[in-house]
Amino acid sequence: MKKFLNLVLLLCIATSAVAKENRADNSRHYDYGKSIIFTENNIEFAIYPDGQFDFYYQPATTNVNIHNSNVNISFNSGYNYDPYVQYDDYGAIVQIENVPIYYDYYGRIIQAGNIRLNYNNAGRLVNVGGLNVYYDGYGHFSHFRGYINSYNRGYVHRPWHRYYRRPLASHGIVYTRPYRAYYHPHRVTYDYYRNHYRPRNHRDFYRPNQKVTNYRRGETSTTRRSLASNNTRRNANEASNARNSNAQNTRRSTQNNTRRSSANTRNGNREVIRNSERRINSGTTSSQRKTVSTRRSNDQAGTRQTPTAQKQRVSTRNKKQVRSTRAQPAQKQSVSTRNNSSRTKPNANKTRTSSNTRDTSATRRR
Image 1 (cartoon, one colour):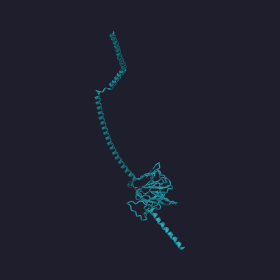
Image 2: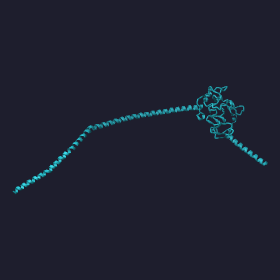
Image 3: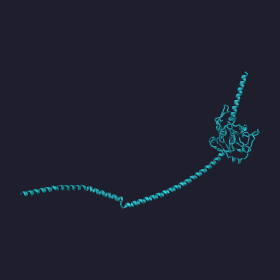
Image 4: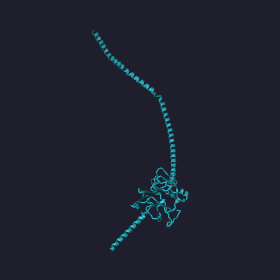
């Protein structure tokens, strides 16, 4: 019995060791804890399943001792990031230094920089970049597939991760009513914000359930705004990049137009020259043809008659032929008469001769 108990105890120890090893491996690669943590442009975000988030950012000019337990370095834990953060009228962060933040109609974060996030019908986070998130029956993280991006391929533990927390209820911006459907926040470049920043002693933000009478950091419209996940990013950096690209495109288009106009001018000059040459050649050819035709007409004027004279000559010939045709039967009759007369004359002569001969012979006989 004692051996059996020892065997069962050994099996339990081995099973727990394997489970700890698998958990450690999971923690090293996939165990994000209560939030999905990733880094975007030196800003570390912690995204919670309901769409709320916390972040940590340490500028190059600031040194914070994270090992001091009395210092909170995350935004929701109380660190002041106002010199680097832009807010809208509801207290939502719309930009952290040069990284824009976008929200859906309910105030859930849907884009941080270049990383986009999606939610299911129950309002739970299901995609963070290329990472697919799955839940158990209690709404807790179950497992993950894929990875966020090439810079965030898995969870990497950091000492300050214990400071990440959800925002206070008085500062929460995720609401059950789609209060941001017609609201458009304003963003400016970080250089402009840094040059015009003034410290504030208190925050005068509207709550999502309050009726807003005057917007100072945004505006409303009569149509629903397009979500950032289905639209191009509109942060200040990309606006400057767009301006630069527009300037480059303008310069390129100007150069192309100049090249095209010069090419068209050259082609037009060539075409004018070709047309003038064609006109000169055609005029020379026509004059040559006229000269040749004049010479031919002059040469043939002595020998050839005009078409009217030719027609008169032909008609005269035709008349002569008609006359000769009409005269032919009379000629034939005269010829036949002559032939007949010539034929009868010898007979008369012969008759006369024979009578003379007879007379002569009778005279002799007498």
